[in-house]
Image (cartoon, rainbow, N blue to C red; front, side, top):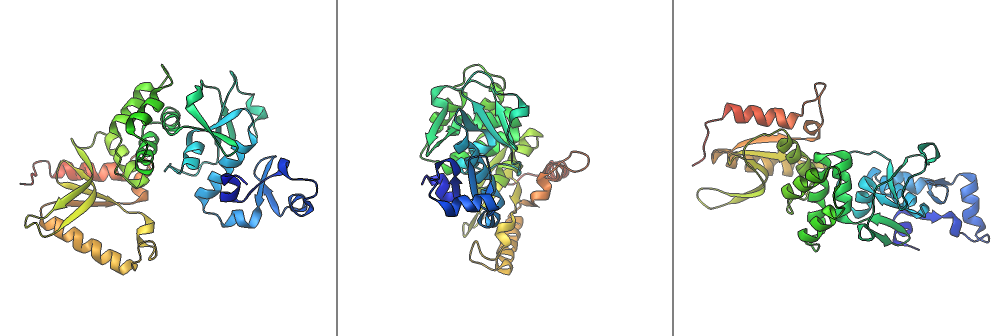
Length: 316
């Protein structure tokens, strides 16, 4: 049993012996859900997985089924455990030959891509092939853009701190000349290893892309003037505007072993202390990272308004 089949409860149909009547019957009667023609999973167990894990399971199933292709892009990022935006079920498979088959022959939720792969651009892992961390970041950036690239590289640097940035950079740019190379290089140059939240990377990327502020620092430790206490903040713009990105997990009453009331009380105390020190606070959530009907992002609009209003403000 490979780590992929064990992690997600996948069953490789082609490897089942004819004597395994029980599992073959479950495939025939619908107890098992077929993710691909060759990989199935218990329907009830699959339904209990978190949406993220369901998508990762589908990526693994596609990879285990593909004999001459490599799991790439967002699907590869899911298998690496990286943060990505959205819940698109499409699995990108990069062919190991010159040209991909016609789209009319693609299985559901699979997209084949024809692009050059060096031998060092992918690894073989427990029965499937997937792009390396660096190549995964490069593909996400050139296929999906700046914001998605920043989220992916920040996540890769934080999750795999045993992999040097030099190695990641070489892997990401090792394609040689390619369309989008300058954008990949920019994403790498702007990446940070200390960001543990995809939402924070997402907000930071939107602010950078919109040209908000002069300097955006991450995970900043702020000490009070009396030196008695200090707090770490998500983003600090131009030395005085603090942006905190709130995720629902913070208020679930379980993840951090505190009740919602305790979390809110501690946050209010922290916010009040920093405001008394001269900082301005802006709290944003997921809704502020999504475009409104005019294509504008709340985090950008709100931050820019505060910066414009306090243009002359300086913290001593």
